[in-house]
Image (tube, rainbow, N blue to C red; front, side):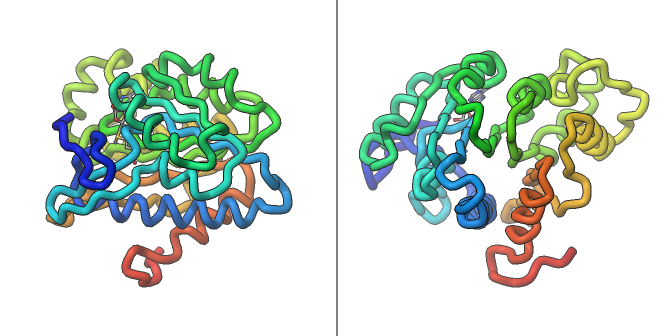
Length: 266
Ligand SMILES: C[S@@+](CC[C@H](N)C(=O)[O-])C[C@H]1O[C@@H](n2cnc3c(N)ncnc32)[C@H](O)[C@@H]1O
């Protein structure tokens, strides 16, 4: 990652493009609807897990806007527990430093490592009686299906996943097919992939929804939110999955408006 320091707090920021505003729009809207909607049923018993946390702030280089990233944003929604995971030592330290100023600091668990490699440790930290929102916002196709499988086993979990379709699956599709089950796509799909059914990049998404569906999650009937770059090219999309009709309802409400405030067309 290019090293840029924030003008706001002097610590490292993650450089990004203006499209992240769309992502954060839906992310905030969803957190708002979730935490308000669960006030009675899950009052105070929601856990937020950020699998690819980053350093806590992003810089939109084009406009020089220095904005909060997903972990810092989540601290405004009063979760009972926060688990932030980041692979890079330097970045998790920066994130911890930033979070120190928050009144929520004592509720945060910081874990450094590959979220796929430290999944057992992560599970041990999650309060088993809570409803967890697992947020995965990788830069590439870095989330293994086995991680989802383990983290969702016998616990109440909703998933909000950034799926790198344009920026990774489409771009590297031929290579991944050649590499097979051990490729990033193979691990994303859970291995033992019937590759004869994956002829186009979009087939991988259909299969992903199928394998997630086998865990009891519903995804297909919902709107996936596509995030486009400044050339209007789709980069990635947000996929929401829940086993609970209420959870699904929250996502539907989240996606009825876009960043411009216009109703989204289904
Ligand atoms: C797109 S950035 C995260 C952005 C963050 N959600 C935000 O809003 O600022 C992805 C982050 O995941 C980290 N990362 C990449 N692979 C990882 C892995 N396997 N486990 C945990 N973190 C990882 C990267 O170092 C990077 O900081």
